[in-house]
View 1 (cartoon, rainbow, N blue to C red):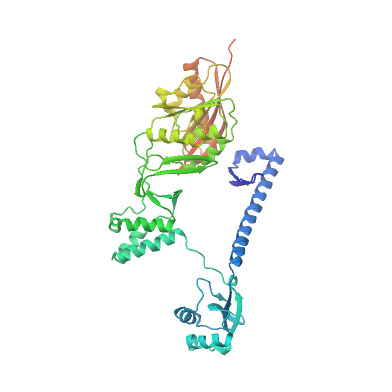
View 2: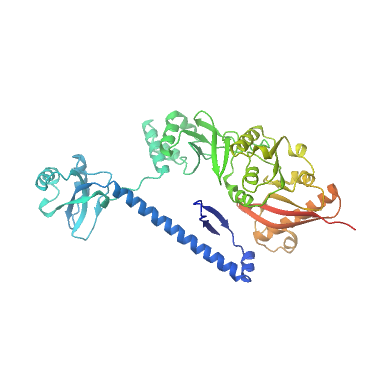
Length: 480
């Protein structure tokens, strides 16, 4: 799996992921130029990443030097072993420059160099007298060296991760509330390490702060989260409701409302996190849709949601018109708003209700069936939505496929042999093609040919379960 980072001339970056499977590797054996192109692309990407990391370090150094000051620094004698005592004494007397870090050089002429807060206008003799009173009991100052140095020679300490900051704040709240050590350890295991950020709202994962004992902290807990995660609103995720609408069970624990705006591949998605879900795992498929050429095409999106695929078809693929079906009123409201936000509302018709009842027939050059774990209930509707005639039409069928090596299909199942997950995808695609062809022959007349031209792996949905998209090309042959 390789991550390709391309830098177009307009300064934007486009990131795409390419999975080189055994099958595609075999194809490359006969196309040495293609393989060489992949190798060059990977090397360019590695060079680009190294360049970015290097420039980032240089930028930080430049910024540090731009804020430079000239200070006194105390060089302790070689092999001095009471650095911590000297540091504490200087800190108590407000002579230690914080948060700059002490430079330690064990084995060199000076075991450590300590930055002092004393201004360089103070002469060396006066400074030695002050130091004698402060640390004379720990070190012989005659063996120390005082030098004037710039502050950038002393590194700033690395900042703690947001998770660590949040953990420390929450731990302090628990100690303040007189929880015993055992309870504190149990509760700290529920402090989240990952979250989703949508503007000034942070969505914590399922299970975060779920123990009822957290309730005793009241609003202090959520204000601590805002402080650590640098946000204004906090929501906590739950399971997807079994209502057929994929409604998220999200609690807004701090903030006025759950409306957020998410920018994805140049497209604005606005939605209420407490009523609609946003699947960031589908980004690779949305990028792929955005690269399609749909000029002059009419597209039907059977499960539109807030516009996950409707908007890429309109904004990037340049579809002429889209019929978007959605039966969740909250998602339909968000879709309406998103069409306006992206300036494409005049090229989309929203059909509110069950797609099997409201989807128009005989209008589509292309139908998107973006429902998992299976969109099979919508296959007859998709067949009816395709145009009449003898053109070339497309169905993009989403499905979760069991890829366990022991769960073989077809001849492999009969012989008891294992097969690769890629082969299982292809066998499932062949089964879907047969089913769709029979449906088209029954619903639209005989003579249909259905071929799977590509299987796209979107993401791993669960262990040994893959979310794939099958691109089916449907065309009707003229009968004599």
